[in-house]
Amino acid sequence: MKAKCNSSKSVKESRLSRTHAPADISPVDWQRALRRQFGREQSFDLECLVGLECLRAEPFFSDYRVGNPQSKSSYRVAICGLHPGDNFCSCPDYATNELGTCKHIEFTLARLEKKRGAKAAFARGYHPPFSELYLRNGSGRAIHFRAGTDCPAAVSKAAVLLFDESRGWVLRENCFGE
Image (cartoon, rainbow, N blue to C red; front, side, top):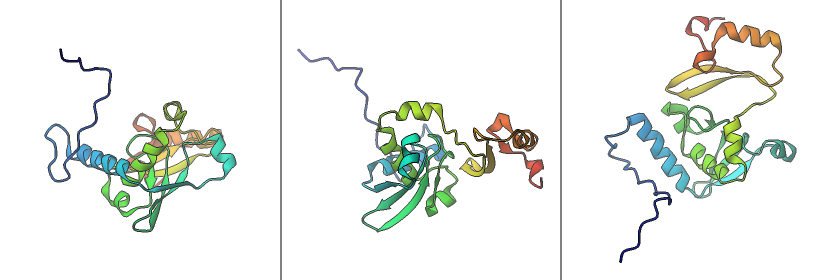
């Protein structure tokens, strides 16, 4: 008699081809998935770049150095979320691909997701005390506003006029000169 297969076991993700895009996903999603797959297979070095006090307060949303022991290169990665465009990497691929991710970001996310409390922290989201303007790479580049927990009322009021809240606080095109 054959043993039944346990359907509760997770199925390993199938490997993506680097040369042939699957028919069921868009080219952008394919390229993001390739970077995710490749980044999660790497044996890079990961070093948090903030002080120990800050790391205890927020062990996930931080700046990291991702080093490649083979090439001796390293890049700065800033983690602010799980979605394309949430994060930043100083590598050339991230600067030019407009995908909102790269192998260094995906490597860092994979390591962080294994830590205790990661799922809850990423579900809560990144909420720094400071407010910021940042360039978001994803489906094109756009300037976004993130209100910090200590954001002055005057700044929040001005942001409502310049940024589109319904589109993730992106700077309205007619407000570039403002």
